[in-house]
Amino acid sequence: MRYYVRIYKEIYLKLCKRTDVNFSLGVSMISMWIFRIVCSYILVMVLDMGVLGVWIGMFVDWYARAAA
Image (cartoon, rainbow, N blue to C red; front, side, top):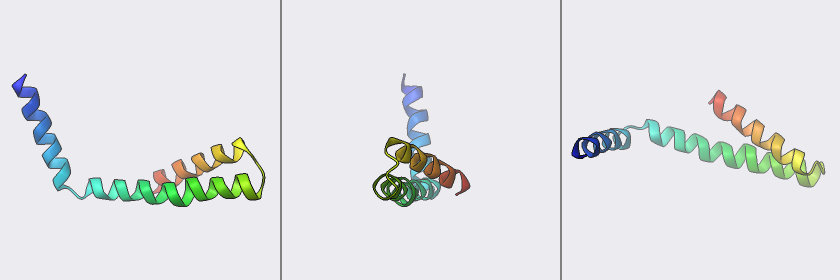
């Protein structure tokens, strides 16, 4: 049991020290606000697409994250 706790702690400390976590967090937050929320708002409210507009906004967000 203690061995697993030690492994978990090592992995956690190594991830916290790296900037990879900060980069992926930043990309996720920025792409969510720019692509998912803004695109969904435009597609739903301006173009009157309804739920389909929300789905398209989600897919646009996923593709933007994959590109980043």
